[in-house]
Image 1: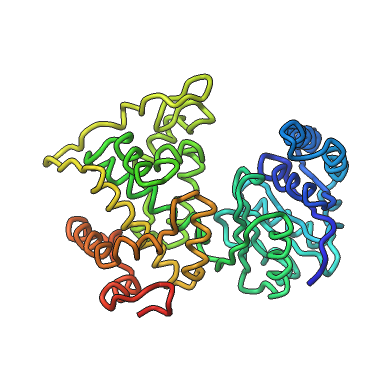
Image 2: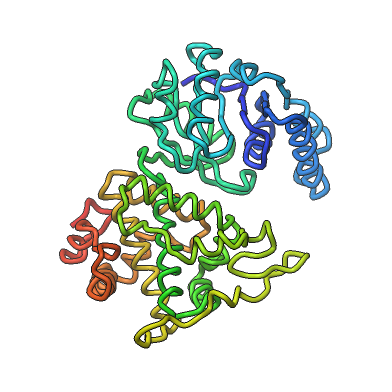
Length: 402
């Protein structure tokens, strides 16, 4: 395993600055580049401010803060960060933009340099194929805000060398994070499984069976820190829709991942969540959450829809989550243990979906899904065969199945 002393970071926005911060706190030298004039200086100042607050809280000495900030070295050229042992790219989710950056980094980097992409939704293999050494390219997906979030998804492409995976998992631990290895499939672990949380909530809302606040209240009532609509506002409704659309297209239009019209409606209205003070909810100038957008809380047209109580809302959304997590296991995305760990750490869910499914009973989950499929037989509620088999046999995801 190669020792990592220097980390290159491409992109000095919120994500890139967060990666740089945790790296210098871990004692690494950071080479930081951003093509936007002044971005690296602003990031350095922002990091200094965050570390100063740690000093004020007694979590860091002033000497350690000053030394950490000094370890950030802005570079004028993208090629300058290629001198690092590992380079992490944190630029916008545009495939051609990333491929161009990796071509340039690959041309400038030493043979042993690892090039990692922080993509949350693009295939690692398509980014790696832009280089002459795809075996040195890997996904390293951090979560925002980086200093506070414990998980890193490590995503080897089909050509990534095993030693590269070892090196980036070692780096993740050095940064104080928990690495989980995921296959290079649409959404990886977290964004794929979390789709079910958003989408089933939207389907309930669109049917007129419950309101935004009723759905969010129900999920918070069983331990979720944020309801699905509250969470979408934090992420950004435009970002959430874009990620969901990419996953839907990545699975060739599988109805399980079809975005809801309400997601498009909110984003098209320019209600992008907390960052615009309006999303599924309105927000005050101080960020206080107000009432839901009333244009969305309209009863469904057509035959009367039965109103769902909190227990019914919970059962529907949990069944969708468990089914998608089971599908990820069946597809070889990651182990059951890795999926549950990823979802707890990245989403602050009160338990992993597969463990939760076993606690409430896999047979009960299957019955819920079968009932929904009988009402909407377009495939969105089809039960993953692995889940049905375990439910029938009384097996477990965690003990070699049935």
